[in-house]
Amino acid sequence: MPEIPRVKLAVIGGSAILGSGFPKDFEGIEIIGENIIYDTPFGPTAPFTHASIDGEPFLFVPFHGITREIRNTTPNSAAERVFYVLMKAGVKKILGCALCGSTNRLLDPGDVVIPDGFVDYTTKRAQSLTRSLREKGVDVDVIMYRLHQPFCPTLSRLLIEGAERAGFKRVFRRGIVGVAEGPRLESPSEIRLRYTNVGIDVVTMNLVPEVIFAREIGACYATLQLVSNYGEGLVETTWTGPEAFREFRERWCGAAAQALHWALRHIDPEDMSCGCDRYRWRAFLP
Ligand SMILES: [Zn+2]
Image (tube, rainbow, N blue to C red; front, top):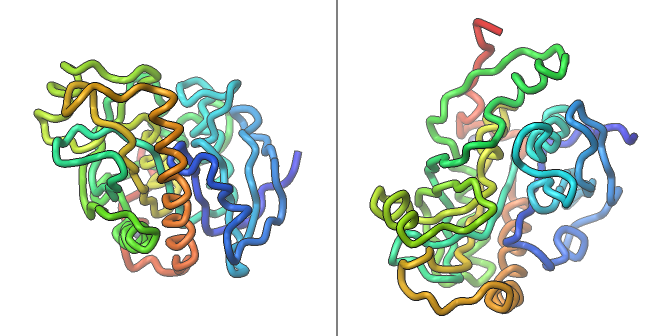
């Protein structure tokens, strides 16, 4: 099994950049290694790409580290495997992305939301990487953390600018993401009662545990949420699964990857003035 490299940057891919060719086909990027499967206490990971952007090395894993064999639900979830690697690599800045459904009636497909809040409705996800590692017999400190400022304001600003430069007409600088367990989509009543009525703007499935594991390992995290469809019952019901997503992907996923690429290029890996790493500490009790 290959050794985990030391890198400060990481991109966790999602369906928002599917088929975009990221990172390989993008300017300033050199591939160091592809299809690298790392060994973790939770089992082997999905294939990573180890690359550099303008000489700064980074790790990329597609689709949140989820494969046919590796799910994001416990035990031995995709996120636990991915974040074990990012922790060992010493990653300090993480960019994420996802497709989402609108639950705010003002949003349309093709809009981008760079969120500043989230509500976790998942039920089967790991909630603490360090506790999961302890259960596997790995000797690590258990980390507690606050979720004040769950999304890094510096990285979020870079994603906003990246999305605007990539040609998105409407880029929202704040918003609340509801995270659904899935894998099914929501019913109209669920959209209305659990999301719209309580002020949630978009719904997605894989933001948790990425956002909390990033805080746990002391890394900044921000995400680009690309609206792909209306929440069920919200505006109209005419969209149909595969065709809608195919058209959508051709139109928007390349631009979403361009936004991530621009943000990644402009990260200062040493700049911790955002303060994100101040909201964590070693637990008093194991
Ligand atoms: Zn930060």
